[in-house]
Image 1 (cartoon, helix red, strand yellow):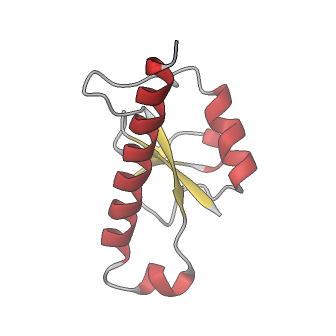
Image 2 (tube, rainbow, N blue to C red):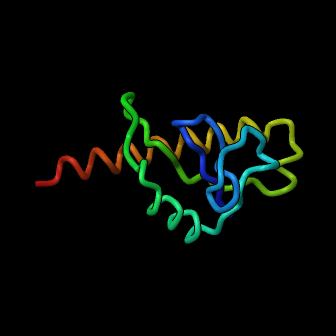
Image 3 (tube, one colour):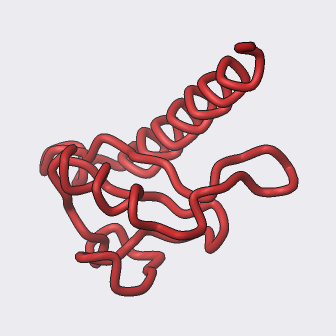
Length: 97
């Protein structure tokens, strides 16, 4: 399962892309296909002025990780990793002739 992090709003997407939340417990959980579809339809699928994408797909934690005190750090790491990957993909797309 996946979550969608919005760098623009500094929050998680709620289910069906209906608003945002700071609470991981209120965040929408999507299959990879659903999340990719949500992002495809997002009209703000551009990059912010600082170079970060508006949104990134983040692999969800399992319930044991959610209860772990390190859960928020794991999620932050996954957000950073997904952001870096999106920036690299974008840079590669811009270099192609």
